[in-house]
Image 1 (cartoon, rainbow, N blue to C red):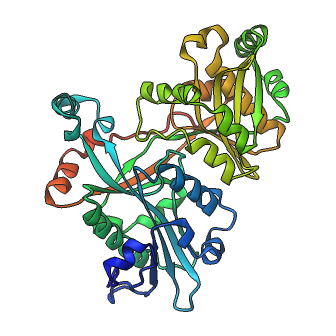
Image 2 (cartoon, one colour; image 1 turned 45 degrees about the vertical axis):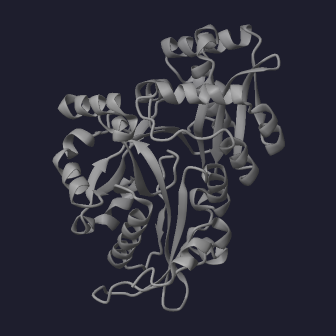
Image 3 (cartoon, rainbow, N blue to C red; image 1 turned 60 degrees about the vertical axis):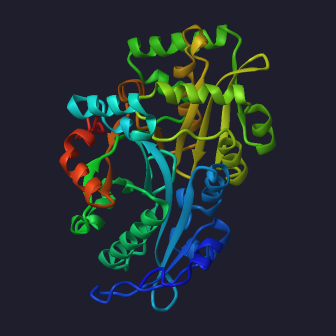
Length: 405
């Protein structure tokens, strides 16, 4: 049985081993680590390759900056010959359940409970995923792996973690449509499928931002040009920063407050990242994560943190001075500089995030791709509530913008 070793080993963070139940078609040894330093990097890298979202450096940056409020585990499944069959990143942290539902009787009930005491709507969740919204999953399989067997074992692991951590729910997130066939049988384990927010993305078709502008109809080009002119006439400039020490120096509490205000105004706010997360990402992912700041003299009025791979650029997190936004169109110009950087650096895709859909897709000719998650309650009461309120809690989120022919 999984987790058959002593609690002492679990606390120490050493790998715990076991096998799947005998009624499955394949048996795997399973190792669960509680720190990135303990992961078998060779086996992990063998399975994940150059996947930056599963890169141990990224995992380490998240772990080191968020360990105070989050418990992390990393699971590695091995074949009988010791090679990697699958891996997953797990974390336990508290979420505000009121952000999941805002309409109807359920919404009013949750709002009333939150007025009485915030603790009534805040609860721990075990996630297969990381505690930031990048629109990516954190579960990987070898092509020859037995998905049913591994998912059954993963569910057993997450249930035991939930019981240990006092979590009320288990969630596997954020899966693209091409990943969903793996979960065909997961309903038998008690999980419900639900839509997450769609990802907005743009296929790069131009070598630079000027060429992109030239391709637009006059009306759209004039609107973008007006925003660019506000920025330029105001004497502002953008600077890209890739040195971690410099990011640590300039990314002050005041700059971070721009991000926290942006999160507070968002309709969906499942996490609030600490200030140290941003320089940690740049430090660990040198050359693949960089900060762009909009400066008025020495003062920073806006920023965007971008993750880059060989083919993609993703503006992950941003913030701007709301009081000065209309004066310089800071939000729009943040998007323009990120899109321009992707074009100039030869990327093929720009991932623009999971909100502000209309603005992003109209301005850049983007489109949406689906994202899904799977959820189940821990214990009879929470399981029953989730099933009873599933339509209110997890509304359908159909795609509204599709790729052009």
